Amino acid sequence: MSRRPAAALPEEDSPSRVACHLDRLLEARGMTLVELSERVGVSVVNLSVLKNDRARAVRFSTLTALCDALDCQPGDLFSVPPPG
Image (tube, rainbow, N blue to C red):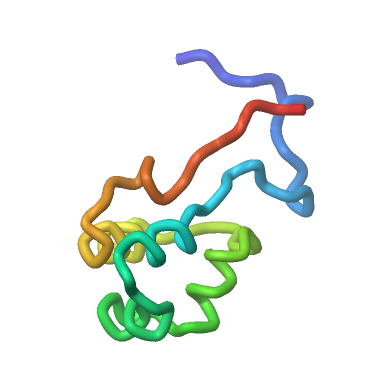
């Protein structure tokens, strides 16, 4: 298993390149953030942090609940654009 050199690891305080497409999925399903919050058991505030690309991590249990509620796959919810 190859490892990236330490210099290539992201800084803890640097912004992530992971983009969340929660707003697009909500709109496509005619669902509000409040409704999603009730379905997945995650606060509106935490979902808003995720939706606005300010989240630093997502638990697999939360990701699974989001995918179930939105009838999607993790790749529909998140993408990683190329650097630059």
